Length: 183
Image (cartoon, rainbow, N blue to C red; front, side, top):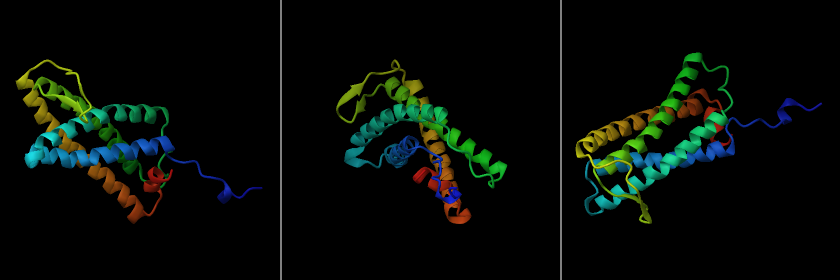
């Protein structure tokens, strides 16, 4: 008979889910800072290259987020520990799905706004993406305003997500954060 402690634990998140999570996080978090810098025109002589970098990363994020969302739907993680209250479990699900929704909509709004401006959609200086919307400056201005608000919402929801993960790790001292780090 094998003792329960010697059987390997099933990971809450697969390696693929963890890699996608951290890759997207590594791109989104700097995008928040980059968005603040370019929106306030703090870039000085590198303002335009910062805009181009922001657009390139945004265009890269869109397919990554779609892949992450499809993968998440096909491979749901193990449930949270049973001792976490139902309201907190609901809040965790709501936070995750809100973040997915915002991260999916944000680059689409940015691409339409940029196309409607019209401005180039560069991909890291290698090539330009085609415009996805005809020129329409009034629409572009409204969409750029929405893009800013969506960025603020992403920052707020990401802060909640990160804060909850840290609370689990340092206050509750459970394995919730470790699930996305090590499985």
